[in-house]
Structure formats: structure tokens, C-alpha cells
Length: 335
Image (cartoon, rainbow, N blue to C red):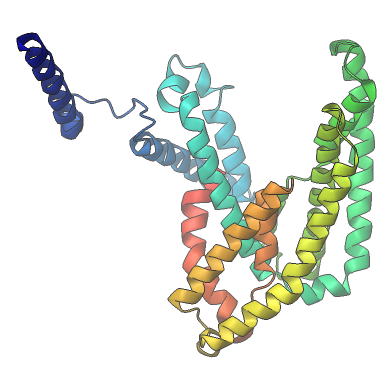
């Protein structure tokens, strides 16, 4: 019993000492750069500050040459990545360890979902309907040519670098999709920076980009299904589920949302109540969740959710004012 008591006392003393050291933080010698899976907040803040500072610094230069802010953020990512600062000894392991990347990825995804929601919110669906033929034509032309060029590049890559055991057709399909798919969030950032979202050109371009993005994700689902020896019908199911969901959200979903906004008095006062704002954010994230689980990126769900928001009495503008600064300053530079 005496040995057991001593062992329990020793373990208890160690746990208390460890807790005291952790409670004391940097005062007790704790290193804030040390990543703790149970408490990732400290390193996340350091990463956030570094990313935002880099983006803002580069934006000072790119604003002078009239380039969209997204260009500064892309180049900032390259500088902070393995190509430049990642070559500094221990920089990556200290500031951006592999274990912390999922947290940054989640933060950026949340930011992109809300940002694409705000973009969709500013779109006038009537303009899309009036220019649907033009948008479709641009989308088809903007997809076929890059897909063809991607497949052509894939032929050379396959002959020089790929093991012949890899299926040639599947590899060409993959490279074609990789080249042909639209960087939809970047397109949205450029149109937003140039104040083109409220113009016919901007809306048609965005509609064409949405079409490209959906088709690209469907083709990617087809590629994965073929590589995994599954049926190619998977891609068809993804497309049908996506189209069906968009129709559901734009018609019965929009009608239900407008009715609820009127019932709560939000439309009359031109600003959502706290309950209506909560419901709106729930719709955004549930929509993103659904498009993600059917094989289309979550950001597409956020964009489609923005299309159902009514614009009467400045209601949509009020939602934008509540979310825009937080998204543009905090979330978007990470994305």
C-alpha cells in the first residue's frame, strides 16, 4: 500500500505541475508556436496575422497598378509557401506545420462559403434568365477549348512521365478536367474587385463560370468513379442531384424563405431579425453541406443559397453589411 500511495502521489504531483505550467502559458515558458491539437487557437492566430499582414502589404503595391486584391493574396500564398519562405529552415514546421493545415483549410472553406453566398446574394437572377443563352454559349466555349488543350498536354505528360500501367484514357480525362475547371472563387473575387457584379457582363460571366464549375466537378466525379472501377452513372447522378437541388432551392425554397421573411417582419423593416439571420446562416451552411456530400464543392451550395435572398427594401444589402467586413478582412486572405 505504501508503494501504491507513493506512486499515486507522484502521478498527481506531475499532473498538477503540468496543469500549472500550461495555465501559466508563456510566463511559465510555454512556446506559443508549439502546435497543440487540443488547443490550436494560439498558432491559428499567429498564422492568421501573418497571412493577413502579407496580403495587405502586397495589396499596397498591386492596388497602385490597378490589380485586383486577389492577385496580391495569391502571390502572398506563394511567398509564404514552400517555394520561397518555406525554404527558410524550420519556418514551415514552426509556423505552418502539417498538423495545423486542416484548421486553416476549414477556416478558408467557411470563408469561401460565406463569400460565395454574398456574391450570389448580389446577383439579379432576372438578368441570368434574360441572358441564359449567352451564358450557356460562353460556358460551353470556355469549357471545350481548355478541356481539349488539357487532353493534348496530357498526351505528352503520359508518354514522358507516367507508368504505362496507368489507363491512358482515364489519365487524359483527369488532365483535361484539371486544366479546364474554373477557379470560381478567384473569378468572383475579380468581378467583385472591379465592381462588375451588378452589370450584365459580370452576371453573364459569373453564370458561365458556375456552369463550368458544375460540369468540371461532374467530370471529376466521373474520373474518380472510372478509376475506382465504379460505374460512370455516378457522374450522371451527381449532375441530376445538383440540378434538382438548384431547382428546389430557387423555387419552393425561395418562396418559403420570402414567406418567412415577411412573417417575421424582416422584409418590411428592410433588415433581418436575429432569428431570421440565424435561419439564413443555417440555410447557407446546410446548402453547402448538401452540395459537398453529393460531390460538388461546398462553395457552390453557398452561392446558390445567396440566389434565394429577396432584395426588397434593402433586405439583401442589410445582410451584406453584417457579414462583408468579417469575410473580406479575416476569411478571404486565408482562402
